[in-house]
Image 1 (tube, rainbow, N blue to C red):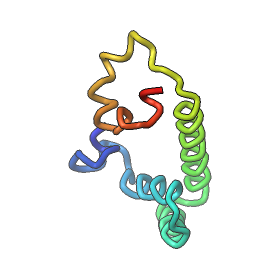
Image 2 (cartoon, rainbow, N blue to C red; image 1 turned 180 degrees about the vertical axis):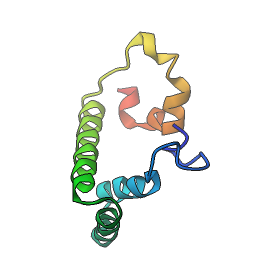
Image 3 (cartoon, one colour; image 1 turned 60 degrees about the vertical axis):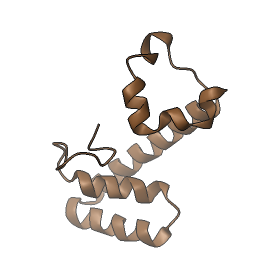
Length: 100
């Protein structure tokens, strides 16, 4: 988890994680030039198949997150306490829907 939020040293054991993370950030960002640059780097380093897979993953997670946040889906009571630290690290506790 620390690799995802930038608090870890190294790649978290995931090959090319920095490049994949940069792509994910650019894909959900608003800078078309940055996205084009990172997309070209990704294709150059890992190929078109990885670009397609990474794009599908980014799109899926983006959609799921937006649906869950916008519909105020609550966390199961059994998971509230055990996910507290994780939610804090990811910033989930700051989502506006938390108090809905």
